[in-house]
Image 1 (tube, rainbow, N blue to C red):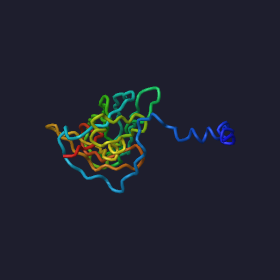
Image 2: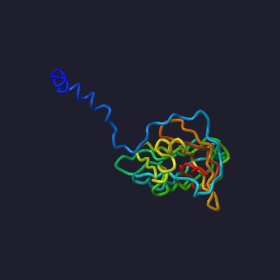
Image 3: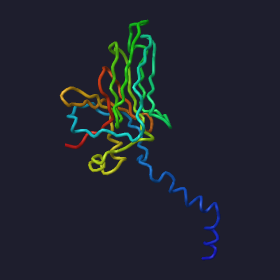
Length: 200
């Protein structure tokens, strides 16, 4: 028994005892492996999805102008002090094929959730994507915990949704190419958000 007591006084022993507690209190669920294929697209009423909330400082509205025919990535960051990435909008060189003309993209983050409203001066003709990153400020609503039983279960069901008229949302083909990040193709203006469907 005395040998055990002496071991517990060792700094190395306390370090080993402390390791399992690292990260306690974090809201983030355990990492979820990336799906091999995009999720299936489907349209649901807005009241049939649960939107992922954010507890972090909101990003600022952003307006970016650039020449059509060139690739461009727009990065939105949450407010100070951390200024971490909230979302990325990536436009391929073919997204706006009218080379040389100016394209203006306006982005307005939606308060309190992982979502944004997107407006563009020209229609998208080629590949473009939106990716939301939630490693720091992931916040599952209470309803999500009731439906999915855990934050990890809620995260596994997340997809990028495009808000449609008449209180509908289209859950787009979504991939998780990296941990804490979901992305989907975009083809038009409007509202985009991260949400999970509720069972029927």
